[in-house]
Amino acid sequence: MVDASISEQSKRLKRIRIVARLVKWIATLSLFVTLTVGIGLTFVFFFPEGPAWSIEETIWVGEGERALSSIPFAQRSILAVLLVVNFVLALGIIGALRSVCRHFESGDYFSPQALENVFSLGAWMISFAVFDMASDPVGIMVATLDYPEVERVIDVSLDGGEIFTMILGALMLLFGWIFREAALLAEENRQIV
Image 1: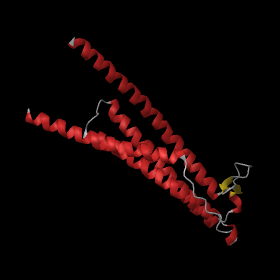
Image 2 (image 1 turned 90 degrees about the vertical axis):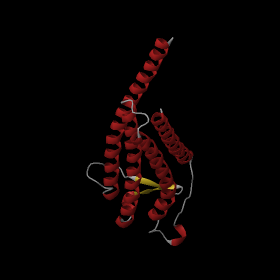
Image 3 (image 1 turned 30 degrees about the vertical axis):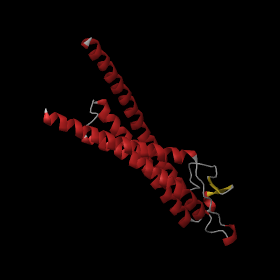
Image 4 (image 1 turned 45 degrees about the vertical axis):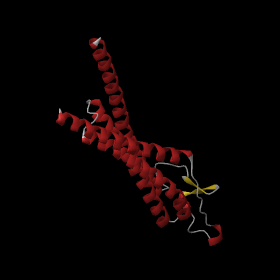
């Protein structure tokens, strides 16, 4: 009976380690892809009529599209800063997920650093969702600053992805706190015995 229970536990732990390893490597690949895309898009914002592409790059402004090349450089620079911050927050989420999986892969489920990484993942996710909600109307407003005052657009919207990311981030924060308390209680019990 005890051997079967240990065998089942060993299988579960092995499965956790395999999935954590897989997610860690997917996150690692995602880090490089996201960084490359972020650098490329930032470059396009600064040089929308670059030599490597012949299509006219556009962004959504309110109900329609606007060519990036028609936006003055100062406004494109502000939009590029918003884009860079968005990508940095996305990279933070992916990096925190990678760190969590790195700990889980090694069987380190309840160390203070592993639990701090779970908490950090939640904080990155909430930060990303809040910034995404705030940057959409700001970006649209910046993109139309050179329009006459009556044609400027501010478009405030909230979509399901932002809400989902915020809720998932809050859950990760909560799990981080709960697991931290569980680890502290387990340590107290070990010291008493």
